Length: 185
Image 1 (cartoon, rainbow, N blue to C red):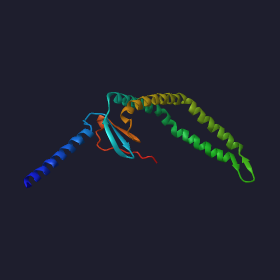
Image 2: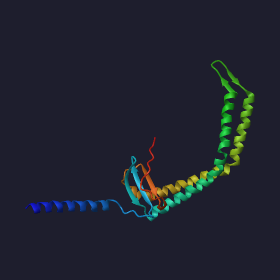
Image 3: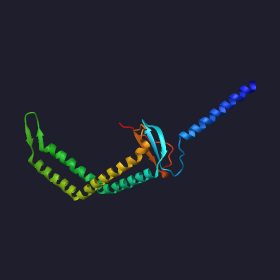
Image 4: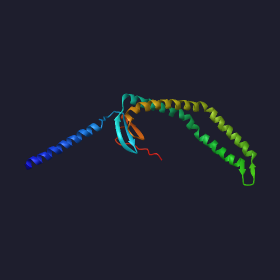
């Protein structure tokens, strides 16, 4: 009888172990090198991970390509950012000099106002010179918005019913085992 009890415990333990192994393999989809994957997070905890479908991969790659073209369009604006900041800072200081107010008086410095007008014109001319660049960025922003909508539609099938606040896409070139969490402040 003792042998039968020991055998029962061994068989029961083996059965439970096998059941656990089968359940683990069913619940986690097979991920292989070279797959695009999405990691779904909620409160910085990984709640699910899936291989992406061909339609999702295509939507993601289109989004990446559209974003990359935006970076190229931003270069001329980045080149003048410092100059625009200098004009803006100068305008701010000239405004402080041009109009000085106390509890009992208001003093307007007409020379500072004239200098302010000159700097404002310089800033305006700089913006006009690069208006085509600003317009191109605006148009690309509209394109990105449309591509984002298509990407969200492609992802919705997988994300439906899963509570999440972040997704992370892992491309075949980024074989990462850990996930990143971006907490909102």
